[in-house]
Length: 214
Image (cartoon, rainbow, N blue to C red; front, side, top):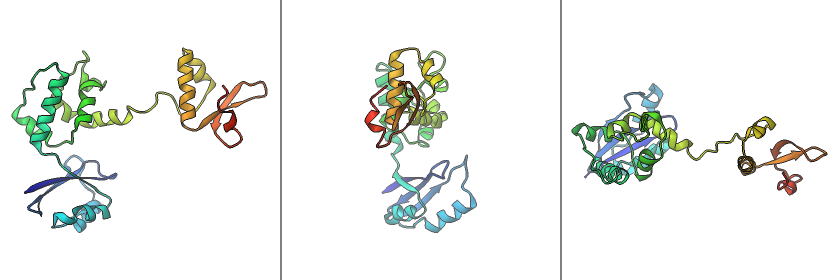
Protein backbone atom coordinates (compact mmCIF):
# COMPACT_ATOMS: atom_id res chain seq x y z
CA UNK A 1 0.00 0.00 0.00
CA UNK A 2 1.22 3.49 -0.89
CA UNK A 3 0.29 6.52 1.21
CA UNK A 4 1.24 10.15 0.58
CA UNK A 5 1.24 12.67 3.42
CA UNK A 6 1.23 16.45 3.26
CA UNK A 7 3.43 18.22 5.81
CA UNK A 8 2.55 21.81 6.66
CA UNK A 9 3.84 24.31 9.20
CA UNK A 10 3.54 27.98 10.04
CA UNK A 11 7.06 28.61 8.78
CA UNK A 12 6.68 26.64 5.55
CA UNK A 13 5.72 28.68 2.50
CA UNK A 14 4.81 25.48 0.65
CA UNK A 15 4.05 21.96 1.93
CA UNK A 16 6.39 18.98 1.81
CA UNK A 17 5.04 15.69 0.47
CA UNK A 18 6.30 12.34 1.73
CA UNK A 19 5.27 8.95 0.42
CA UNK A 20 5.45 5.63 2.23
CA UNK A 21 5.17 2.33 0.46
CA UNK A 22 4.16 -0.59 2.67
CA UNK A 23 5.00 1.57 5.68
CA UNK A 24 8.51 2.45 4.52
CA UNK A 25 9.68 5.90 3.35
CA UNK A 26 9.99 5.84 -0.44
CA UNK A 27 9.81 9.44 -1.71
CA UNK A 28 10.15 13.05 -0.53
CA UNK A 29 9.01 16.03 -2.61
CA UNK A 30 10.28 19.38 -1.39
CA UNK A 31 8.87 22.82 -2.27
CA UNK A 32 10.34 24.20 -5.48
CA UNK A 33 9.19 27.82 -5.48
CA UNK A 34 10.20 28.46 -1.86
CA UNK A 35 13.00 26.00 -0.94
CA UNK A 36 13.72 25.12 2.67
CA UNK A 37 16.35 27.04 4.55
CA UNK A 38 19.48 25.20 5.69
CA UNK A 39 18.15 25.10 9.26
CA UNK A 40 14.78 23.70 8.11
CA UNK A 41 16.46 21.16 5.84
CA UNK A 42 18.74 19.93 8.64
CA UNK A 43 15.89 19.64 11.15
CA UNK A 44 13.68 17.83 8.66
CA UNK A 45 16.21 15.12 7.84
CA UNK A 46 17.03 14.71 11.51
CA UNK A 47 13.40 13.84 12.26
CA UNK A 48 11.90 12.28 9.11
CA UNK A 49 11.29 8.64 10.07
CA UNK A 50 11.99 5.54 8.03
CA UNK A 51 8.75 4.04 9.36
CA UNK A 52 5.33 5.55 8.62
CA UNK A 53 4.08 4.56 12.08
CA UNK A 54 5.98 7.36 13.85
CA UNK A 55 5.67 10.05 11.16
CA UNK A 56 3.09 12.17 12.99
CA UNK A 57 4.98 12.01 16.30
CA UNK A 58 8.34 12.90 14.74
CA UNK A 59 6.95 15.76 12.69
CA UNK A 60 5.25 17.14 15.77
CA UNK A 61 8.70 17.56 17.32
CA UNK A 62 9.55 20.13 14.64
CA UNK A 63 6.03 21.62 14.61
CA UNK A 64 4.90 20.20 11.28
CA UNK A 65 1.31 19.04 10.80
CA UNK A 66 0.64 15.77 9.00
CA UNK A 67 -2.34 15.29 6.72
CA UNK A 68 -2.98 12.30 4.52
CA UNK A 69 -3.13 13.40 0.89
CA UNK A 70 -6.25 12.78 -1.15
CA UNK A 71 -5.51 10.49 -4.12
CA UNK A 72 -5.43 12.33 -7.45
CA UNK A 73 -8.31 10.35 -8.93
CA UNK A 74 -10.56 11.40 -6.04
CA UNK A 75 -9.58 15.06 -6.51
CA UNK A 76 -10.47 14.79 -10.19
CA UNK A 77 -13.83 13.18 -9.42
CA UNK A 78 -14.63 15.90 -6.85
CA UNK A 79 -13.65 18.74 -9.19
CA UNK A 80 -15.76 17.32 -12.03
CA UNK A 81 -18.76 16.84 -9.71
CA UNK A 82 -18.54 20.39 -8.36
CA UNK A 83 -18.01 21.83 -11.85
CA UNK A 84 -21.16 20.13 -13.12
CA UNK A 85 -23.12 21.28 -10.07
CA UNK A 86 -22.26 24.95 -10.55
CA UNK A 87 -22.26 24.97 -14.35
CA UNK A 88 -25.80 23.75 -14.89
CA UNK A 89 -24.93 20.12 -15.52
CA UNK A 90 -22.06 20.74 -17.95
CA UNK A 91 -19.29 18.15 -17.92
CA UNK A 92 -15.70 19.29 -17.42
CA UNK A 93 -13.24 18.39 -20.15
CA UNK A 94 -10.34 17.07 -18.07
CA UNK A 95 -7.06 17.52 -19.96
CA UNK A 96 -4.15 15.08 -19.47
CA UNK A 97 -2.06 17.89 -17.96
CA UNK A 98 -4.82 18.62 -15.41
CA UNK A 99 -4.04 15.40 -13.59
CA UNK A 100 -0.52 16.56 -12.85
CA UNK A 101 -1.70 20.05 -11.90
CA UNK A 102 -4.43 19.02 -9.48
CA UNK A 103 -2.04 16.69 -7.68
CA UNK A 104 -0.13 19.76 -6.44
CA UNK A 105 -2.93 21.26 -4.33
CA UNK A 106 -5.30 20.33 -1.54
CA UNK A 107 -8.97 20.66 -2.42
CA UNK A 108 -12.21 19.77 -0.69
CA UNK A 109 -15.87 20.62 -1.16
CA UNK A 110 -15.59 23.82 0.91
CA UNK A 111 -12.69 25.19 -1.18
CA UNK A 112 -14.37 24.32 -4.47
CA UNK A 113 -17.71 25.80 -3.39
CA UNK A 114 -15.96 29.11 -2.76
CA UNK A 115 -14.04 28.80 -6.05
CA UNK A 116 -17.13 28.23 -8.16
CA UNK A 117 -19.70 30.40 -6.42
CA UNK A 118 -18.23 32.94 -3.97
CA UNK A 119 -14.88 34.19 -5.25
CA UNK A 120 -14.83 37.79 -6.48
CA UNK A 121 -11.14 37.87 -7.48
CA UNK A 122 -10.79 39.19 -11.04
CA UNK A 123 -8.15 36.54 -11.83
CA UNK A 124 -10.72 33.84 -11.04
CA UNK A 125 -14.06 35.23 -12.19
CA UNK A 126 -12.81 37.37 -15.11
CA UNK A 127 -14.40 40.56 -16.40
CA UNK A 128 -17.74 38.87 -17.08
CA UNK A 129 -17.98 37.53 -13.54
CA UNK A 130 -18.62 33.99 -14.73
CA UNK A 131 -15.11 32.58 -14.61
CA UNK A 132 -13.44 29.91 -16.70
CA UNK A 133 -13.05 27.70 -13.62
CA UNK A 134 -10.54 25.31 -15.12
CA UNK A 135 -8.12 23.13 -13.16
CA UNK A 136 -5.26 25.23 -14.55
CA UNK A 137 -6.95 28.42 -13.32
CA UNK A 138 -7.54 26.88 -9.90
CA UNK A 139 -3.91 25.82 -9.49
CA UNK A 140 -2.53 29.11 -10.85
CA UNK A 141 -4.52 31.25 -8.41
CA UNK A 142 -4.76 28.72 -5.58
CA UNK A 143 -2.98 30.90 -3.00
CA UNK A 144 -5.14 33.90 -3.95
CA UNK A 145 -8.24 31.74 -3.46
CA UNK A 146 -7.08 30.63 0.00
CA UNK A 147 -6.48 34.27 0.96
CA UNK A 148 -10.03 35.11 -0.14
CA UNK A 149 -11.45 32.25 1.90
CA UNK A 150 -9.45 33.28 4.98
CA UNK A 151 -10.67 36.88 4.80
CA UNK A 152 -14.29 36.10 3.87
CA UNK A 153 -15.47 35.96 7.47
CA UNK A 154 -13.89 39.23 8.54
CA UNK A 155 -16.04 42.25 9.25
CA UNK A 156 -16.03 45.13 6.78
CA UNK A 157 -15.96 47.52 9.73
CA UNK A 158 -12.77 48.69 11.48
CA UNK A 159 -11.98 47.39 14.96
CA UNK A 160 -12.06 50.88 16.48
CA UNK A 161 -14.43 53.85 16.61
CA UNK A 162 -14.05 57.31 15.10
CA UNK A 163 -16.75 59.93 14.81
CA UNK A 164 -15.74 60.67 11.22
CA UNK A 165 -16.18 57.04 10.17
CA UNK A 166 -19.56 56.75 11.88
CA UNK A 167 -20.81 60.00 10.32
CA UNK A 168 -19.74 58.69 6.92
CA UNK A 169 -22.08 55.69 7.10
CA UNK A 170 -25.08 56.27 4.89
CA UNK A 171 -27.89 54.47 6.69
CA UNK A 172 -29.07 53.87 10.22
CA UNK A 173 -28.75 50.11 9.61
CA UNK A 174 -25.07 50.52 8.72
CA UNK A 175 -24.53 52.42 11.98
CA UNK A 176 -26.32 49.67 13.92
CA UNK A 177 -24.14 47.04 12.24
CA UNK A 178 -21.03 49.10 13.04
CA UNK A 179 -22.04 49.34 16.71
CA UNK A 180 -22.81 45.61 16.78
CA UNK A 181 -19.35 44.88 15.42
CA UNK A 182 -17.70 47.08 18.05
CA UNK A 183 -19.64 45.30 20.80
CA UNK A 184 -18.67 41.91 19.37
CA UNK A 185 -15.00 42.72 19.97
CA UNK A 186 -15.62 43.86 23.53
CA UNK A 187 -16.02 47.62 23.15
CA UNK A 188 -18.68 49.82 24.73
CA UNK A 189 -19.54 53.49 24.07
CA UNK A 190 -17.98 56.16 26.28
CA UNK A 191 -20.26 59.18 26.82
CA UNK A 192 -19.63 62.74 27.87
CA UNK A 193 -21.77 64.57 30.47
CA UNK A 194 -24.52 65.35 27.98
CA UNK A 195 -24.73 61.78 26.68
CA UNK A 196 -22.79 62.22 23.44
CA UNK A 197 -20.54 59.34 22.36
CA UNK A 198 -16.92 60.48 22.45
CA UNK A 199 -15.23 57.10 22.08
CA UNK A 200 -15.64 53.34 22.33
CA UNK A 201 -13.45 51.52 24.84
CA UNK A 202 -12.87 48.09 26.29
CA UNK A 203 -15.71 47.02 28.53
CA UNK A 204 -15.01 46.95 32.26
CA UNK A 205 -17.08 46.06 35.30
CA UNK A 206 -17.96 49.71 35.68
CA UNK A 207 -18.95 50.36 32.08
CA UNK A 208 -20.53 47.02 31.10
CA UNK A 209 -23.82 47.93 32.77
CA UNK A 210 -24.17 50.80 30.32
CA UNK A 211 -23.15 48.96 27.14
CA UNK A 212 -26.71 48.96 25.84
CA UNK A 213 -26.90 52.73 25.66
CA UNK A 214 -26.14 54.39 22.33
